Structures are given as C-alpha cells and as structure tokens.
Length: 97
Image 1 (cartoon, one colour):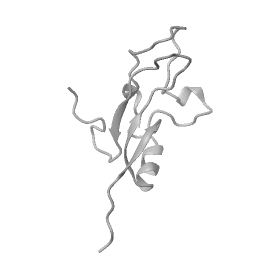
Image 2 (cartoon, one colour):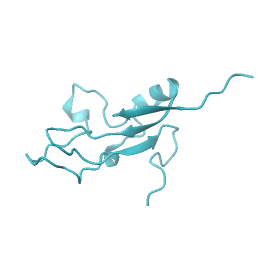
Image 3 (cartoon, helix red, strand yellow):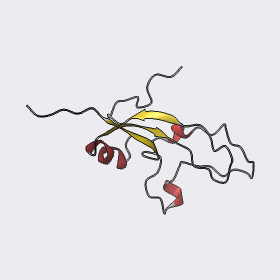
Image 4 (cartoon, helix red, strand yellow):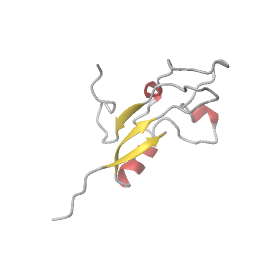
C-alpha cells in the first residue's frame, strides 16, 4: 500500500477568487464601492469559483481546505470570509445555515 496523509489546511488564501493577481478583472477578493472604512456586507464566498485553475494545483500540493479572506481594498473591515473544501464537491462551501 501507499501512505495516505490527511489534507492540509491552506490558511487564509484567495484560491478560487483570484486568477491572475496583476489583472484587476480576475480578482474578486475585494470591492471598492465607496470610501467607507467598513464593508461588512461584502461576502467573498459568493465570488468563489470551484472551477479555478488554482484549485487542482492546491489539491496536488496537499491542501484540502482553506479559508477565503476578503482583501482590505482600503477598508478597515473588508468583509466576510468563509472556509471552502477543495475536494471538487458540488457544494464546496458546505451546508448553509
């Protein structure tokens, strides 16, 4: 048999919400709608793309789940984040309350 290791936690990342960091149209981790210091209503999980090319790369490296975090975009509170599974499941965010 081959050794089996559990999946690793990837930390707070932008896997699945950012494709090419140098191209603004592919970065969904932050929103700049106004100059307000707080944006708690911005939910980064709505922008998550389970078909991102970065998801299988992370899985090959052993990352099984990660926390998505909103970037500050100049705000004191950037928005909400969430934990996602990178296992290719149809609902990567898990059950919703």
